[in-house]
Image (cartoon, rainbow, N blue to C red; front, side):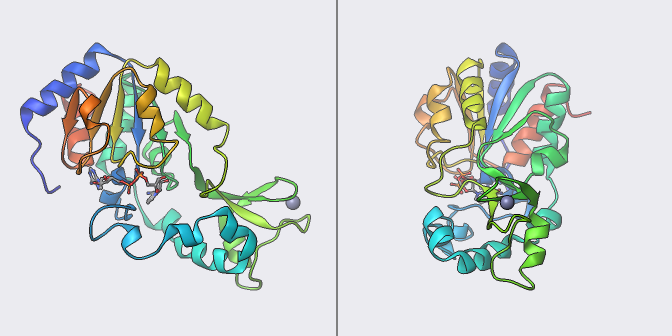
Amino acid sequence: MDTVIPADQIAALVDLVERHLPIAVLTGAGISTESGIPDFRSPGTGLWNYVDPMKYSTVTALRTRPAEFWKYFSTLRGAVEEFEPNHGHVALARMERSGHVQVVVTQNIDGLHSRAGSTRVLEVHGNLRTARCQDCGDRVALAEAFAQLASRDIPLCGCGGRLRPDVVLFEDPMPPVFEEAWRKAAACGLLLVVGSSLTVWPAASLAEFAPRLAIINREPTPADGRAEVVIRGSAGDALVALAERLGAWE
Ligand code: NAD
Ligand code: ZN
């Protein structure tokens, strides 16, 4: 809410969107900062200013230091209940209902798109709702895994196998849903990227495969040069302005 988005930039985005309906959207951590969840790379406030994800958010850490991994991971415990969708998430959900948005591909694990009402969401980095067994693959609520940490260091499945969070860690393969995201990005008329530094691969490669790009982000991204519209400002404000101009906000 710190920026005034120039009207001509919104007009250019509206025009582009209207010519390529329905659009696909790719979101990153930047869409959730206005809900109070820090992103990774914003200067000063990003999570990488405090913790090194390469130390904890890796398959190696899960395998070699599972107790430490779960201790670190449990700092995300409150995240599911504590944070609410913001006006940017709501704008995307309303633009899905109005037929402007075909799909939201998100790198976020916070679940806020679905909670805001979007129904076609591809979570390419997993989610914080569930944990899964590393032996039998069964899923349990992540809250249940966290609850076990009161009595043991590593939460276990009913079969005795170790549980792991259902998020994509560094060194993990991409989940099957990523292929669907890739197909959607390649087949859409326009991919609108919101709040992503476009530096985390392979998620950033979705922008490479899209025929046309628009970007809403506070800071420059490596794909800005290829985008037909770049809006440098608040994701929430820009998306509400877009939804209003498309008649989707009411
Ligand atoms: P990133 O941290 O690399 O980049 C976020 C970008 O958003 C930055 O370029 C920043 O300038 C911009 N930004 C921040 N607040 C904004 C706002 N209000 N409006 C517009 N732009 C804003 O994020 P990424 O590209 O998504 O990559 C980070 C990885 O970390 C992802 O894989 C994601 O899974 C994970 N992550 C997820 C969450 C979450 O679920 N909310 C939070 C942190 C990290
Ligand atoms: Zn099991």
